[in-house]
Image 1: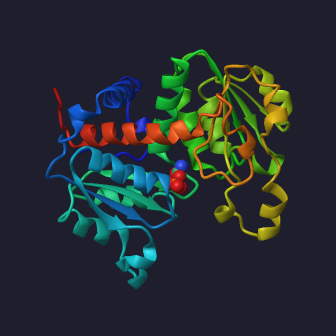
Image 2 (image 1 turned 90 degrees about the vertical axis):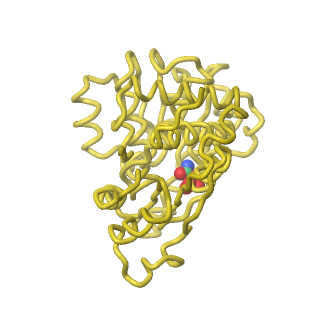
Length: 306
Ligand code: CP
């Protein structure tokens, strides 16, 4: 039995196989329509979510399986003080696989140690969000045709944005990837990402503040929102929240084939006026999230479809 806590739980080769499977699902959805008949997915969400929870549920339903779960800690026995370890032991009696989101870093890992079923980390605090990263990789590979030889700009809250940390960890494993890390001084990437991931891998990266300076050299611009829920005081959040706003004028500085990604939800950091620009790929990215989660469920449940 295998759990997924980080994108690094898979080798590059295994990730490639999951992305290949996701692309086959996209091309031939009917082939997979009954692959998980009789199987159940539990979504255990202790923190709000739209895309991750509902795309997991859509993924299992598309595979012919069923879903159960809760969408907030308040509506589960966590409100009475139940631990994640006890909860997963019980859920293991009800479901075949679980996706867990939790505000505490490491909570899905703790759950996985007592679980009788595969546990997928659906986002733990400011730490990791592996299935968002798999979505991002599938989106980049599908739209750009490659995951190597690429310059990726990541802009916004690089300190608290767990999707950023997971994406960097995953992409340093592909050849000739350059990162341009665009953030205010206060929201730079954590030291452990800079030292243990980027420097340790001799990665080509630079840290800048102005989005306009970075835009012309990028193949991908990965925008992120400022993570309000992880700030200790409202004043700092208000000061930071509109630091970057990608609009039509700024987009004129970008390459004609640069793609704009965003894990969503967005707040103000991408103006709606660019939603119809062919480079705006964030809603297509949300669709890729369903295919990749279907592929992940099949992989973890060891379901083969011929
Ligand atoms: N991208 C993402 O994790 O979105 P949700 O918070 O809506 O799940």
